[in-house]
Image (tube, rainbow, N blue to C red; front, side, top):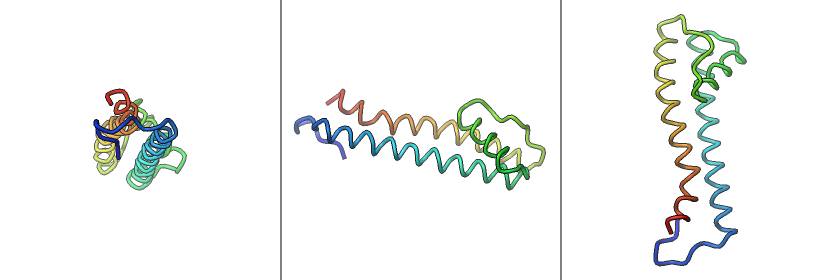
Length: 106
């Protein structure tokens, strides 16, 4: 995917395509993660779609849920989703920064 050290640096247009592709990949990862969170809050807690979206988005954004879970399944899901969300944010940041860091280190 990236040019090796012995090859010349990629042209600007190729670099921008690479950055765009990585940004779209990170956005897709975050979108799918948000859908998982919305589904979990809807299924386990019986929240309306908008409330489930809000709770999932707040957890994915690192702020924490607005409503505390009431069911056992909801509590387990919320805990696992919180751990997952923290990792996904780090992975998405890595995906976004990879082409920039590669260009800098190349």
